[in-house]
Each structure stands twice: as structure tokens, then as C-alpha cells.
Length: 315
Image 1 (cartoon, rainbow, N blue to C red):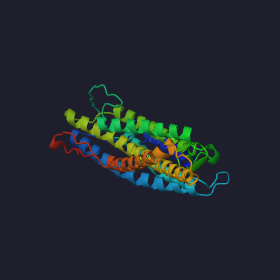
Image 2: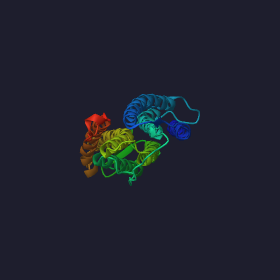
Image 3: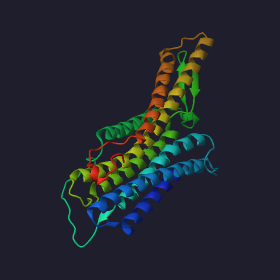
Image 4: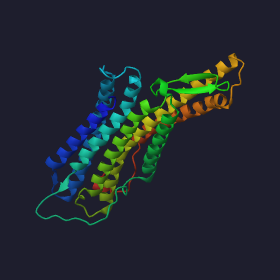
């Protein structure tokens, strides 16, 4: 099963996160120490997430490429390519989740806390939330359309375009049919589940010991952004890849069908005439989406915080 490496990775993330929640507790003693420890903890978590996610992406892709007794070899490189961003996103979000579960907590004989209602999405930058939702909706739409229009006689990996009143045809692959769509859908579901869990932890974690509300809000906002930027980047690259290869397949199949119709002196038809342009636009849009996805990972939200608190607003 091609999605098994991703499910195994998700299981490992769940086990590690659960163990971290039960076994790891960090305590801070004093306002300055708490803020500084929170900074260092966030930096270490972010760096660890990048390293672990890169290793997980390579490992998941290699696992898919390994020979399997019951799995066909056809289409395996395409699934392996999809596993790169999916495994990266799952591992990155999982490490951030563990980091939030082990966030420095106030300690000592006397403790104080500020009562405040925090929603699940309250700390997220609006642009990042809109980007994540738009990517998820676009991905589901692309997968649904691909599942309806794929060629079921070619293991749902290609698309066929007809011309010449249906007398000639052109086919091309890879295409985002159900063969590739199902692993992509499972991967998006894993990213959504992990991101939701991590955002819940961010919203409900103990506040740091400080009287400056801007410091607490800035740290929580930075944590929420760290949670979602890796998952959003992975989803954007995945969806962009699906759109790009599908657009190229549509263009190639339509051009082949149109050429075959002209050779037979048959009418090309509207579909074979328009779809090459549609496929080209889709492929170009997918490339732009992939570049934008990479850029999302490096954007840091600037938050106003007092300089004397030494809070890294870029994190």
C-alpha cells in the first residue's frame, strides 16, 4: 500500500506526542527566565522540525520506491514524489506539536495565571489561515475532478481526450486520477488532523510568567504560525504538483487527439481545440503555486513586542 509510509509516520508522531505530553515537563522560575527559555525552546523546536522533516521526506519516498510483492511498479515514482511534501509536512507539524506539548511551564510554590478566552484559530495570521483553507479546498476540488475524468482502463492514472466526433483520441499521463488522488487525499487529511491538534495545544498551553500581555500574545502567535506554515507549505507544493502534471497531461492528450483528427481529415472539435490552452494555464498556475508554497515557509509574521523582553518576533 503506497500510503503506508505516511500512516506509519503519523502513528509515530502520535506516539511521540502522547509520550511527550505524559513524561516531559519543563519548569521556569521567574519572569525573565521564562521568556528566555520560551525563546530558546521555540528556536530548538523549529530547527529540529526542519531536520526531522527533511529526513522523513526522503525516508518516505524511498520506502515507496522499494519493491513490494503485491504493489505494481507502474506509478510508483509519482507516488514517491507526492510523499516528499506530505511526509515533510506531517513530520514538521508533528515535531512542532511535541514542542508545544513540552513548552516551558511556570513553576514554584506560588503561581499566577491570567484568565483569557483563546479560540483555536485566534492566534493565527489571517493571511496564513486563508491560504491554508484555500489550498485545502483547491486540493479536494482537483482530486474530485480528477477522479471523475480519469481513464479507468489505465488504472486511473491517465486522461483521454476525444476528437473527430469521437472517432480518434489522445491519452496522456500522469494525471491526478484516483490512483494518485487517494494518497494525496489521505496526506491532506493527516496534515489537517495534526495541525488541528497542534493549534489546540497552542491555544490551551499555560501562559508564561509575565505582566506584559504583548509578550504572551506574541509568543502564542508565533507558535501558531510555526504550526501551520509547515503544513501549508507541504499542502501547497502537493496541490501545485497535482495541478501542474495534470495540466500537462490534459494539454498533451488534447494535442495528440487534435493531430490524429487532422491526419484523418476529421473535425477537431471544441474540446481538443480548447483543452491545450486550458492545460497550459493549469500547468503554469501550478508552477506559480509551488513557488508560492516554498515562500510561505520562510515568511515570519512581525509582532510588536517590547525590546527589553528579548522576544524574537521573527519566530
